Length: 612
Image 1 (cartoon, rainbow, N blue to C red):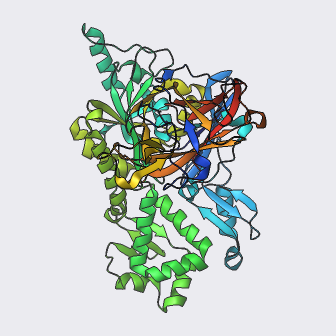
Image 2: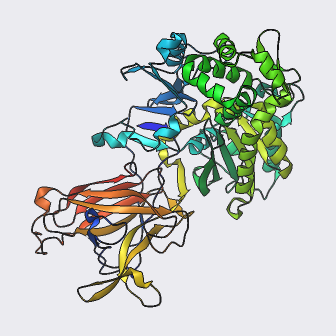
Image 3: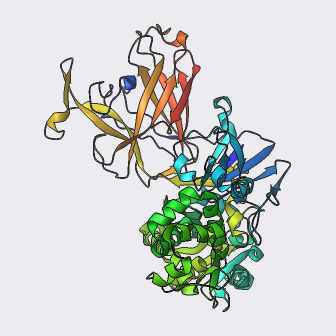
């Protein structure tokens, strides 16, 4: 089983209604394809959702792959010793003073387009290439969000059960659930000084005091959890709520969980949300600063003609970015590659020191050592747009009525290592009585949590649907209720086309193992494939699949065997064979199975969200 930390496919809950038509929108109607010609068999109301205990296959090892915007890594554990999580101790190459349990998400292809290397190896090899030679090589970094709709290729269709999608904030939540008190830091106890992560006091004393108060209280609802759950959770009560903010390289993702009795399972209280407020925003702010000083046209030309030197410059900035803190007093020096200095002189006819004097940027100077010298205020200013976006996103979430009563906020992810971010979040949210907590190994929280999630995927028992999902069908036309342009007359009957049949509403709770059965039949004799388009939208009240905001997001495919496409052995006419599809919801991805009712044989069923 692979547990891959990644914000990805969401659960789908299929509802039912006795008013639905037994035939779908015809081929000629808007947004309808001929391959979608299916007829749902609904002579009576569809059955209510059933809940089945999820069946978990047995695997000897769980491997988690964290493919991040800025860095990637892996971890694994054996079923014989699940508590021992193994990781790469040190990747080849790397920067001085930086932990190497992850490697940069960098890919290098040869001039012929063949794979050459990944991570530090790719970055360092590209760096050492001759500038003219480097122009023929293909170097990619921070490209994760560009392949969102691409096929993963980690497992085959035949072994699809070996791949499990783990949502990043959920993985972090599962890991934090296991932590002991000495593995957590409370930002409210920050001591004055440099503001580095290791300089904050542990929350041992405060939580021990809280635990003692709980023991003395005769009316407290002490939450007893199974062995293996961390001390922090043992001191919380059933129903306690907390937020996990996964601050990564490209995005920030938030989730809200509530502890449940009796085994410490988790219930999602509000749909997972996120925004483009990752650490790359600070990098882009630095690039914009360079454009203000040296000119946007020059920076674009330098990146294009001296790509390896540009990588050097970004590495130098990354090293200084990690040392930035709200209490830092001294300025920061950022090394400019010699090729940058030389290239600028040849392009502009004067040196970089002159450019700095002429620019309107007065908080960046030129040092005698040949470096850009930035004041602490200037460096912190680069963080502000991204940090402000994160805080506003958290505040908007906390204002929701569904998440009232939150006691804890866990900051996790690589960007959560930043003292600038930690200080800003604590300053903004600490006054609200929210305890902001950071795990010691904050950059590895998601990776380790994904391994734990792979061992027990049922730990998150209830999730919230992020969108409204459904299909397009025909309904009986009702004058005054349905618009005239949707009227379709077929065989003397009046139908309303393109009706959005809602399966699940946005923010609706969906439980793990929840299953709904729906029957369909082929529209034509000998039909080999039934394809049902799925639609989604953010609104809860969409009426038609042509409404603004409604879009096709995937397709449910039922593959029929040749022997299943002819006369029904039970005597039904050709084309009216019943195919019963069963869909499970509440997991990190939709699971579907199907059976031919007449033969009781399985039908190959799948859902495709990547080909749109």
